[in-house]
Every structure is written in C-alpha cells, then in structure tokens.
Image 1: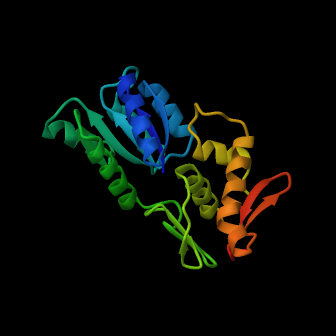
Image 2: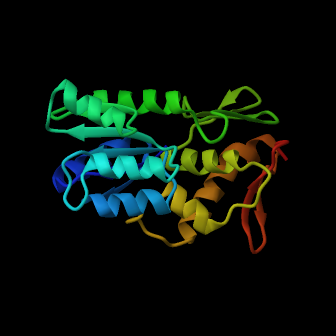
Length: 225
C-alpha cells in the first residue's frame, strides 16, 4: 500500500513513516497543506494520512479539494482536537476515517488496513496468474500451492506488477510506486529486486513469468510463463 503522510510535526511524521515502512507500506511525507495537496494530486496513493492543523492549508480544505478533483484515495484524518464536531467536519469534507492524537500505532495500522479493505483496491486484491497467486490484502504469495517468502519490498514490486499483469511496466514507474520519494532512485535497485523475485517465483518452478521487455521495463505474464 502506498501512503502519503501530511503532518507538520516532523518527528511524528518520521515516526509514522518508519513504523509503516516496517509493516511493508511505501510512505512519503510532507509537512504543510499546500505540499500535501500538490503531492496527492500529482501522485497516486492508496491512503492519505492527513493532519487537520496544518500550515498553509488546513486538512479540511486539503481533503475537500482532493475530493473535488476526483481523488478516490482513502483519507484518514489526524488531529490533536477531540470532539464530535471535529469528527463530523472531517467526514463531511470527504474523509473516510478519523483518529485523535495521541494514538496507538497498532490502532493506526489496523485503521489503515480496514480503510484499504473498505475503499477497495484499483485492482483485485487477489491476483491469480496461472498457478501464481499474489494476495495484496494478506501480503502473501504462492505458486502451485507452495508459499513463497518475500521481503516487504520484493512483495511490493511483485504486487505492482501483478496489478498490471500482461503490461510492460517501466523501472521509473516501479520506483515511483514502490519506493518513497526520498529513497535512492537508482534504476539498478529495481533490477536487483527483479532478479531476487525471479529466483523465488520462477526459477524453482521452471517458469519465466517475470520477463524483461527491452527498452520498456518488465512484464508479469498472466498465464505464469
């Protein structure tokens, strides 16, 4: 899941980022409302964690503008405020959920996962590609009924390719969708993870589902290769 955190308390934003990345999420952070609106408009996110009290443009207005622009990302609002009027206003402007500070990180992760289930994914949560099964919700992968252990980043790369099964996906797109904006943008990083995936999902099974498309990137064949 790709998440944008819009939070002006930089230490809190960094803590959320590190915690969510440890859970396998891909996370970007910005620290003011205008930057949050621009980032969420220009990039595709599954969920936006949006503080209400932000400099430049408050969370209510960011949320309203995203919805007016047609964004279907899940929006979870954070605030130090507490009360039914704040919650009502957040939901009225288009937010999907609301969490008051201070909050438990375990609860935040649970809310994000529940939100992802409610809003649905842009692609089926469980991709069946021949005998290769990629389950986005459970974050599991198997081939021919055998579980395959993947690192969180390997799974994120495979999941993105599975959502675009049969299509050529460029290295740049994989970097943008799987790595956060501040990460190393060396395309060789993608090659390393593709090689690792081939060793796990193809080679032991005598398959070649994960293919290199010269000049275009990589393609995961729907029939399993």
